[in-house]
Image (tube, rainbow, N blue to C red; front, side, top):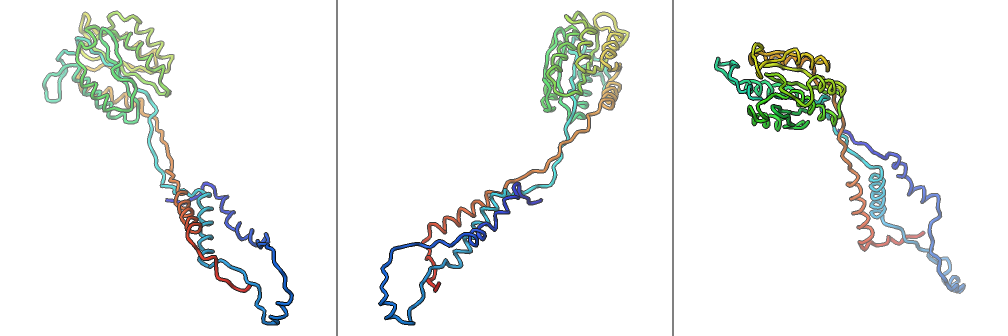
Length: 323
């Protein structure tokens, strides 16, 4: 902790009362008087000298202390606390999650050997990823037959995790509109204020008729500085609407400078998100400041109290002494 003055120049005012006392003549009251020369002759050499009233020592001390406190208040004393540093993030990360009907397929092997759905495996991995991105703003888009912003960019990761728990297959429709999801993400990134922009799109199918072709949407996102990582999940040999279009996902990632990954099980999926986390670390940024607490109120209050005492208390004007 350090004490300092915001206006140290005010301290030069401290000797001002002494300068006024020595440089300006003392005030003397003038009044009419009747001179009687005979009184002087009668008094002779025993005539007392003229009398003047001088202020008491306590009154002088209080007045000096009041002036000292007033100058100290004008100098604006502050208490400066030890430095405080806060780490800040530098990325906006958007998570796009496929909620098509195929995401309810129970073909993901859980750690205990039991089978779990693709969506449950994805949720577990996404929660771990969210926990590692402590200083980033995250957003969540879900897509099926349509794409929806489930959570806009926010530093409140607890809310994001809660909303992720409430997702379910077919919640956004049974189909897979990848292009619409990327287009919606591009709109969200248009309002972002940071340069580090990343999107991770997880799907287990191919685009089934988006209004905006996935490749075109990826090009738009790339011009906004968004890097897209595509993650495919499930059986690459699947056919029909559940078939994976890995070349299309690779093209989306390439158009934005990202990369494509495929996961056949939860362990591989978790490793993919860890790799992305390592490839796109949060920029090391920090804000440092020293809290400042103004203290001018204390000397100002002391000045006001002493001034009130000097003005309101019936002080004796001083001891009458010879001039």
